Amino acid sequence: MDALSVTATQDPDSFLGHPVNAYKLMKRLNTEWGELESLVLSDRQHFPNDDDQVGAAKALMRLQDTYKLDTQVIASGDLPGTSSMGSLKSALSVDDCFDLGKVAYSEADYYHTELWMSQALRQLQEGQETAGAANAVVILDYLSYSIYQQGELERALDFTKQLLELDSTHQRANGNLKYFEYQLAKQQAAEEAEGGAGREKREAETKGERGNADYLPERRKYEQLCRGESIKMEDEWDRPRILRYHDIVSDAEIELVKQLAKPRMAPLD
Image (cartoon, rainbow, N blue to C red; front, side, top):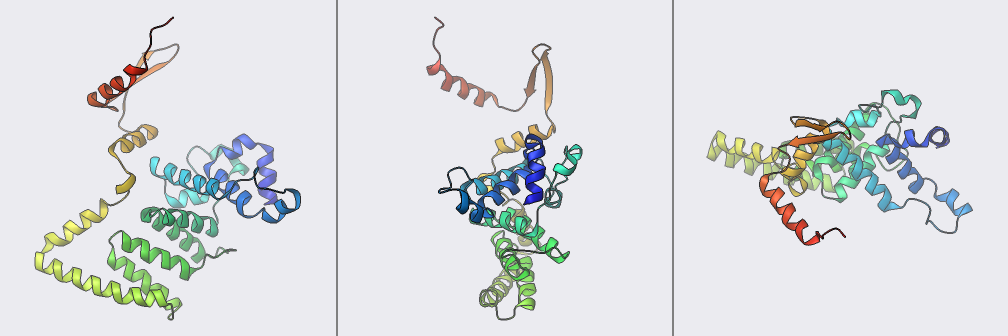
């Protein structure tokens, strides 16, 4: 915390311009300064709370989707465009990744739960220490369930078996083992009855599940625009510089915006 504070105070704007730094600082001000806060403050009004920490976590995951960033790249702190930040960059710990996974899990976002729990497990297996509740058994428990929720029974079963190798008495994992094996047997029997088309259909449905509840075609276009991908751009004017982006909004959407705007229009005095 001391090192983080010193670095942050040297150049606050640049430090907080790095999304990993912003998330870590929000998390630590909320969770690790409780004892200090109780000594100097009578309330928490000037400190981030749980909602602020969750909001920072969601923002980091939105950034991940928008720019198609690899989880390991984010965890390392080496984001594109941050090479000049030097010592201002910071990495995510096992506990940080675990907490990001828990935020996603609490939102029933099993896609990001898998990504961040997998990263936490990877760093744990690489020998990184953890100071919180994160351990291999707990992480594998989250992983098996989040993967099951995405329709991948075989992988969910594999993670459950890994968990039981570490803790053979784990009650939920033992129950899940029997349930996953039963469901997998039913699935395989159905696929055999339907032929190869059944498995192909299931795999296509599984791949299409990512973000169904919160992934609209408009968001895909927005993310492409942020990345500068497949967007036709035309210079309209030099000073001030005006750019026209093509094929972002449909003609029907343009008309709807016009209709919504008309009642708000008024003649100039």
